[in-house]
Length: 616
Ligand code: ATP
Ligand code: MG
Image (cartoon, rainbow, N blue to C red; front, side, top):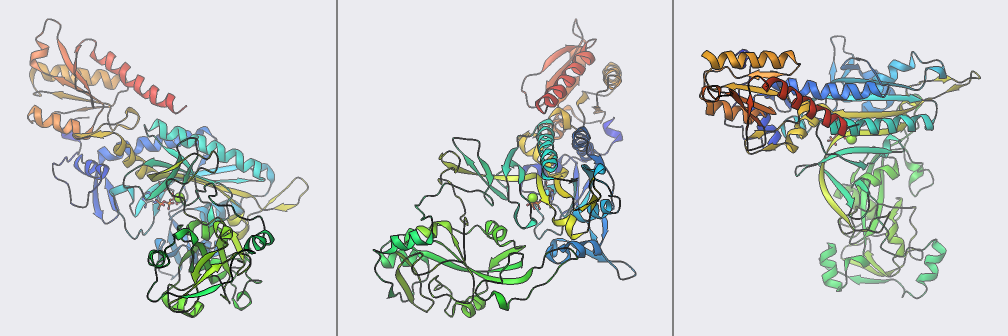
């Protein structure tokens, strides 16, 4: 390809909103342009690399027997009402009406669409397992699109959905997907960290996210210094740092020596820090009690305090009933923080958030800051497991400026539910090996997820077994963002001058720069390009009438792996040569013009083979 015949509008300046390297470089290299907030167009150079990522993903999906389909991007709203997600997806889902006033959704994901597709076709167990995938446009009305294509509103996802008769079959496909994902990222030249992830309210049993380390990452990863434990903080668990009793009875025995509860005046003391200073003790002997509002709770609350008064709703035909809104008191040791993702998973809620001040006052009968587990009525109390080890604690007394001291778990209060709710932080101990845990920031590139029967049940998918009995298939879902993957490649492979593409995703593999595109230099450059292209190498020929310095700067910026400079001086040597330089290396080498094409071809293929082998 001649530079003058393609469209690579390189720039020296970047827009102010391009704050991360990949956004700046893709913009400057003329790979992408912004149409509106979160909406980006790929220009020819960008699209070439994008297509390579797409090809690698497609090859790996095909290799594990996943079958490509092309559903629509616009999906009937009806399907989302069937699954219950019409209500729970929130504002990220773009809804539109057609001229007949019917509801449609611009696909943010496609569990509904693909499940609707297979339910009409599925009859026998012989058709399972079945894994379908698409590489297609998604739209999410992100509140804060940022970092260029890293978090856009429109993006492309490879999303796969698998259907099985049993858990063993799902497990097999889930693991094959995990291996395929590892290969995909390695072939793209990316170092990913697979981490255990939350499978939360979606009803699934396991889930893994593929993260790249990133300063601007939205995710916190918890990793162990001594073993391979790696988890998203949303999911991370740690070794207990207290001696929790095995039952309420044991707790009561332990409480025998604790003095009776005492009410203490704490005028104008609200925060844990203020209270610690006031009472001269540390946060570990406080019980923090927070009021949470949960939406679409699936857990049975009928036997909880206040539970009988709650209304239920059935979101979809075969789906379980949910409580659209319920409030919970959550107790946790003063030095720890509630992990809201864990809380939502335990309550089987679609969302949890701190209750408004007005709700806190209504529920606790006290101003904000004085909630406590003792004497609380009309609301279920959920406690972190570490709370059960406290047998002489301080907490709010449900009245302004009052706290209770000498509270004993089991004697003075018993939670409705005890569970691991803490947010793990650096310095906590690994649950597997006791090693020290540390934190990293990460960006999620892919996610694999055992969903179970939530969608197949809600949407009425069935198959008949050998004896003609009807069953609901179990399901897995697996996604990779292509745009984010591409941007992450640049985040990992660049220097001050520009991108340094791994060979597998480079838009071109070789750039040939004639110092001046005329005479003998032109002839040699044309011949070289022609030989390389003949050997299957993708070549960009910089035929622009620009100074060599300008061409070199652009070549560095767009990051094509091999640069070949053709100039008069080297052509007039005894053995005429061209100068070859690997992007990212300082030294260039002189290649005999008669051998240059062949040698370069070998080098390009060797690099591709190396990256593909890494992924094997
Ligand atoms: P995030 O937490 O970053 O919003 P997610 O958990 O919502 O991501 P999934 O629903 O698991 O994402 O989607 C699968 C993949 O799609 C993600 O791993 C990511 O690579 C990609 N993706 C999701 N949202 C965006 C976006 N706004 N822009 C670009 N890629 C995205
Ligand atoms: Mg995810």
